[in-house]
Every structure is written in C-alpha cells, then in structure tokens.
Length: 109
Length: 113
Image (cartoon, each protein chain N blue to C red):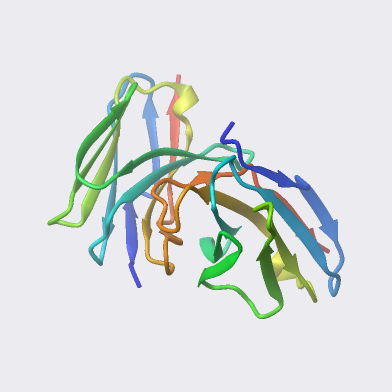
C-alpha cells in the first residue's frame, strides 16, 4: 500500500507570499493528483501529473519520480487560496486513490 | 462544476438505520469511485465500479454496499448505521478503468445521531 506524507500540516502566510507544499510517497506511481478542498467540503482536482511540471494560473505542480516527491507552489498568494490542499496517488486497488492528510493553508490579507 | 452530481447534499438519520446515497458521473465517464472523509480517518477509498462491474475495493465495511446501474449512475448503501459512520461521502468519476483524471462530486454529508 502506498504511504503518502504531506508537509506542512498547517501553514499561515501573508498575502503575496510564495507558498510551497510538499508530498512524498512510498511506492512508484503512474500519476499523482493535487486536490483542493474549501471550507464547506467540495473537492476540486487541481493537477494530475506523471512527470515534470504543470502550471495553471498562479499554481505550479512539480514531480520527481525518482525521488517519489511532488511539490505544489502558489505564487502571489491571495486570501481566496485559503483551503486544504491534498496530495493523492493510486494505491487503493485499480485506480482508487490514497490520500495525504492535507495541508491546511490560511492566507492573511 | 465538475459535472458529477450527488444526492442528497445532507442526510441526518439515526443509529441502526439504512440510507442510500446516489451519484451520477460526468457524461461519458464509465468509472465511479466512492470515498469517505471522516475527521479521524481522513479521506479513504471505498469502492470502484467500471461500466457496471465492481473493479476494486478499499476500506469498505461489510455493512456498506454499492452498485452501478446500466445508465452508469451509482448508489452507495449504508446499513446498520453507527455514530462513526458520520462523514462526508464523495463520489468521483473518470473516463477509463484507470482514470486518468478523477472528477469529484460535491459530496453527501451524513450525520448519524
């Protein structure tokens, strides 16, 4: 079974700061998912990546397959980025995901 | 809006009861996954169906069962409910049996009293 570790668990930053959230996993994978969950519960898929780097607006995700590590970066952070960010990898059988515990991010104005 | 719908949004019921949660996948998606999010266990995979057939089981209790119908919607049945079953239940859908990408529904919040 794949073990997924995220850090930090909690992060409070000022508006405009560059944010980095890290994710490590124990078993080789085909792809890694970054998810966002706002208060109120809905989950949004931000990225699915299997190599290199992806960018969407102010969000950047990178993955190093050899080191079994991925990072999610937020540039020019804004209070609306406040949410829980969750890393997930296949590992639940077929394509069921195994999740990290999430990083609770608060961006203060 | 992911295109995945779940009903109901909220459900409050008593211990010992049985409930059914419903999920409609995105148009064209053949896989449906069910996930449970609780305060103590976090998010965990319960079960996956692909084109009507069960494909994978995760940490699904024997009191829980699911099925996927010919129109590809899925139902998760929870019986003999316990207080610990209170959680958010998400479904997700994807095009193929192995993803690639999963799209999450808004979730059903179940409260067992």
